[in-house]
Every structure is written in structure tokens, then in C-alpha cells.
Length: 241
Image (tube, rainbow, N blue to C red; front, side, top):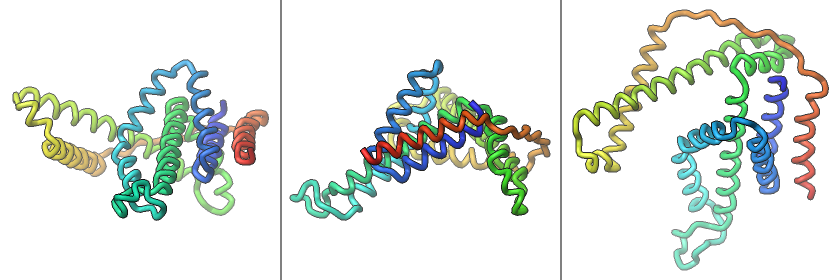
């Protein structure tokens, strides 16, 4: 499938999920499950999606708390009065968190199934009309490539620091029960984040110039445009069922 079609299909998918309702959310789940059942690398995609969602667990928890207890509406437990979550908050939290989960999984599909060069090529084609209003779309494409590279480097640095920290703790012979406490874990996370920030800033300051070759732009085959149109039609049908 042409990278332009993949990007447009993802944008259509995200648009209907973000601004739809529970019917669109259920339909999007069905589409994702169908895709995961059809591809051959399903276990790897499931694992990478789970890791992405696991890193966002604190965001999900904060969203749940905000929607449950800060959304006006009917109390779930009337006896608790203001300390009770509301039915409206539960409904909104379920949809917003579910939508975010679905979009994150869809992002993982696009990233894992499309090389960075093809993503850049697709974006170049989609952004090409900007040249007619005097905006250099090639510069934006270069920034996208650099962002992709930086994300990979930051992830590598994080894994390296985390592995080094774990080895130093094992060699120091610390009490595992004491080191597993909540406050100790927060200290370790803070230290890890500070070291990661320092390493990234140091690399940015002392980095060397690099040349980037932008891939060529090519128009997608006409018949492939039927996929995003079919997806949009499915969402619209679900809306009026």
C-alpha cells in the first residue's frame, strides 16, 4: 500500500474516532482487531502496542481521576456526595481513554508497518501544495526526519541508562525490599530522567552536522484511494445505524 494512502487512512481513522461516539469507537476496535488478525507479525505488533500503552498508564490514571471526580453530573454513590464519581464522568472517561488507546494502537501500526523513508515520502507528497503559498515543505520534511531520528536515539539512551542503573544496583547488593519502595522508585525515576535529559542536551550541543536525503515523491495509484473512502463510509454508516 502506498505510504500516502496509509497516512490518509490513519488521519480518517483518527478523525472519526476523536470526534465520534461510542458506536465509532466500537467500529474502530473491530477494524483494529480485523487488521491484527490479518497481518503475519501480530505478536510483535501486540507486544509493541502494549509497551506503548504501558508507558502511558499514568496519563490514563490522571484522565480517569479528572473525569470521574471533576465532571458535573449524577453521583454514582449518593451517600458519598461530593466524594463520589459521576455517571457522566465515567461515560466521558471511558470514551476518551478508549479513543486514546485506539489511536495509540493505530499509530503503532503505521510506525511498525511503514519505514521512515516511506512515511517521509508520503508526507512530502501530501505537503507539496504548500509550495504554492510560499512554504518550503521540504524543510518540514527534514524536521520530521530529524524528529524520527531523535526519538530513536532518546529511546536507545533511555534503555541504556536503565540497563546501566539496574546493573549498578545489582552489583551494589542493595536490599531488594528496600529498593522496591515507592519513594525509592520515584528517586530512581527522577535520577534516570535527569541523566537522560543531560545526555540528550549534551548530544544536541556537541552533535555533528549530517546530510539527509529526502526520498522522491510519487502519487498513489487511483484505486487505492478507495480504502480511506471505504473506511470513512463505514464510520458514517455506523453513525446513522
